[in-house]
Length: 351
Image (cartoon, rainbow, N blue to C red; front, side):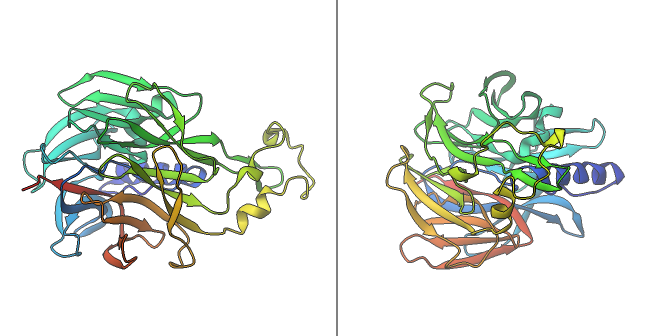
């Protein structure tokens, strides 16, 4: 999570977000893949002339013609029929985060919501298939998913779970997929080491929270994104995590009782990462298939996979802050942006 700095106030905000990133998930933005023709890809990067700030850009799928859309971060495209993009930003006057929608040329900005609970907006924004609903992570409710009406943001519902939710993605068929934290990170400050890592899996539900389903049981799955037809999901898997990392006993980090460096093996396993991979599975979680892994791309992390509107490619970010697009039929990978993070893919109306 990196937020830029146009002033001292903004710098302080960026530092706060960076601190949160060190104890939580890596920055990610699971959105929605609506069907249509492939449009432009939006991403966050440093603003021209001020790389310490954050702006939203769009670029053609071949990496050409980059354009600045607006100052802000975490872009999310509305469906093709709406033709706008929502952007999160920081208001220096109120010290709140705001959501605004803008036309793709950067014109006609419209304020959607101002709320301190948007502090976690970088954990995901997702439009509904109609474009009238927007899901985001509500920090005031410890990571529940809040869904607002775009034309009337005071009308909202909340998906509250017993654990923290991240990375909402909205299917063409109306269902939501999201990352759920199944085990919070536990750090033993007495021994200065991680004893219980944060574990996550992919879940899904109806937009009202009913019909909940656990899609994966990998304990290291995150960042789900629907295929344009709403039948499959792509997600990231941290290969260093597994069921073996579940805590065997209640956390005692604050009590300083774990003084034996051999008392818990999780820290040693966490230090020797096995890398990250992209998987595709049916909405039920069956038919899981790895489509990209560390054996093919030597990276420390993969994140934010987004399906192309035509269903033939997947774009994703890398630990080196680059955006790549992979063809699913050939496995060919094209780099389209550098110094970039967070992305979404525009769906254009069918001709």
